[in-house]
Length: 492
Ligand SMILES: [Zn+2]
Ligand SMILES: [Zn+2]
Image (tube, rainbow, N blue to C red; front, side, top):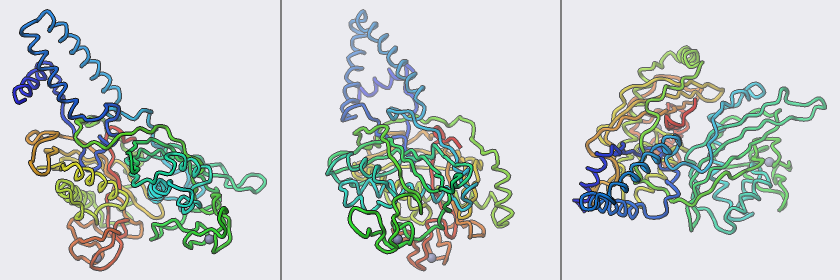
């Protein structure tokens, strides 16, 4: 085996096809789509290739009249696949559908000055996972009925009838469509509708299979409504009175507390319809090599980024680009350390709840396969502020970071290399978004301490400081990381 491996490397070098190896990293998501379509047992496939190349080399030496044409065919095939891969920039094996472009939902602020995209995305993120996990039966789905219309619930029920979903992890989501009428009511005084379309890429796991899905959810709400203030509750209460959701009679969506019919978008966002663009059975993979893409792309800098940043500095003179980057560095360092050890407890207080769930899903995936994604000598070399968004509740700063380090996957017990290189650093760039509550001011803290009480950072799974009990992971007291986006898919 050793000899064939060496031969493969030599052949690879000769053909110039030992393209860079690639990696997941925290939030890398490169392998989120599971590298589908290649059948089962990637390891078996690799062995077959080793074998084939071994025989090709032998043919070239002993029967060149057969070996040479075969080599020509192989080279042709490699060029063709490289070309195909190059064309499909977003994903290596790619989702089977073209992904949509993200758009800003800022236009909504014209009718709803309280609207916050940070809050909306958090809501859309939680609702997706809650509704998916409830789709096993009509009864469980009824718990989210005020936020998921009958039509959308019927759709979810039919996905895997009778099979409960164990986990639903959003790998990426983007607002791709925003409809805002000119006026909140029409000529007859009837409320118009605002709508937001969200595209999700997700891994949904039932007792039997894991599906990689691309789906769009269309959210609608009366245009006369204003967005609600962020609540501590992560549940889905009655959108009118806030009582825990309970319908007054089975089969109706009338609240047992306030007696209002609530599944109509009169009080809050409701999913009007869901469409499934694709669903493939693909287990998550973490050992697949995916080349780094997008590193050389120009930075998407929002047109108003400098003006918004100045505004932020004026509102809170304690903030400087330098001290915000110091906090970014702290989060980067802690996240890479925790990720490498398959133990994210130390970063719980530095990332948002939604991002934490996502990161935990991947760490669990590595653990289940007896693997670790080791990140060594990682460092940020350069940063640029790409976007600043400010709304009534949140400030959000998106920073493009350039970083490099040794990034590889090993077997937990033996340390055997499964992917990547232990010696060759790999440069990459990503867009990281930090959020902080609008009500909070002060210099960002660059130490792993509770931003409320100053105790060493120990955070419960619910996102509260173990010392002072304050909830901090929604950026109530200091900036937390809420998104990691790849340079090849980020579109501002
Ligand atoms: Zn109610
Ligand atoms: Zn505290």
